[in-house]
Image 1 (tube, rainbow, N blue to C red):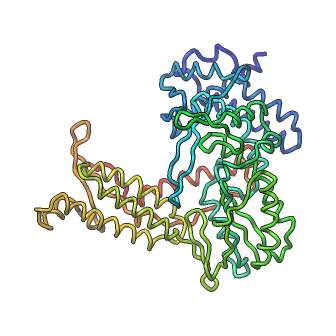
Image 2 (cartoon, helix red, strand yellow):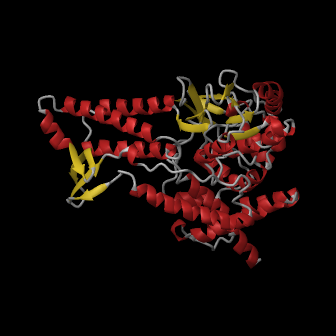
Image 3 (cartoon, rainbow, N blue to C red):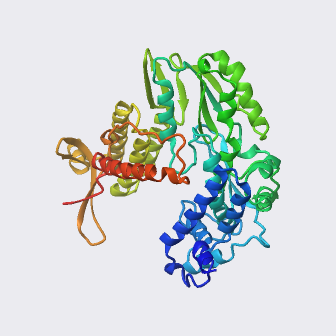
Length: 500
């Protein structure tokens, strides 16, 4: 009995306060069970996997970890329909104790609409109540090991240890050679999160079906009116991306099963966006596209006719995840997509132009966050020239801002008060200010061109963080990325605060 309490952390004497929780022990307890769940799935013991899932979601360790995750993620201050947000340690501990299956009934989702990234259309987000988020995070702990075991090898979206950089890295590997495929099917699933068939989900998502069904039919509230949800999963829910990963698992096998080696068919997926390579347009149009359509239709999904295209790698190239790839004779170049560059600069210009009374140091802090985040996303492709172009445009936007602020001052005065030199760098936009201790400080504007361009090392396609044989591989990869992160900092101009 004592051994069971140690494994699951169910003993009420484990902790009396939230602050006293031993998080390394909690994380280890949960991960140990997740590894066992993944192993059971790999060897086909689904009954054991289900029993281990039940053990996990009833454990004290999993419950407190679920609450911790929903109270620390980026949306932890956004309430659901009940307006509740957990702020205190007492609230968090009480919530963890209340996470039970018996009597659980989720509240309707709170629906909000935000602009889509690449269009003027709106994207609907469905925000669960805080307690429902914690329930989803709890069951996600038991579902994620299964998703990672079932997922297609070349699926990279919303999965642990994977990123858009891995997806683009795979694209380069598939298309860079002289003998590589020349044609690309660029696929997009229409309203993916909103149309997945509920019956299919209940029959195929390996988790507590009663709990899943309650989430699916909870409905949503908009303008104080309750609406039913007849299809789809709420985009904005913590468990939705993992459910989507399982929904699309098997697509890679489905399309490669109908293709020959000479067809050069390969799939790269990121959430609901994907590309398929092919030797000819006919292969993709007549052989692969019908298979994809059939696969999606079984799940209540369909391809977006507007966004799904077939292009030639040398004539038009292809757009994927904000990148543009095109082959010039035998050389493949992947660059930031022009539309994304334009959109980023428009956002920067608009903010600078409307920042009439903001302090200079506050503007620099805001700009540094955006510039370094954007540049780090693109730093693994051919982006050096574009980085310089972006810096140039931001400089002139700032110069206009300075002129509007000080229309009566001379150019020499503006230069003296807003720009400085630092070693080989010139015309650095900066600000002087005092910190909380009254010490004089300087903050400088980051420059995208100072971000080091470096080839990304893609994750192994079959690497699974819940498989013990990859433990050493992920340890080496983590050490490499930590070392690489230090190099990024050394080569950027996100100087932060410099003593004078």
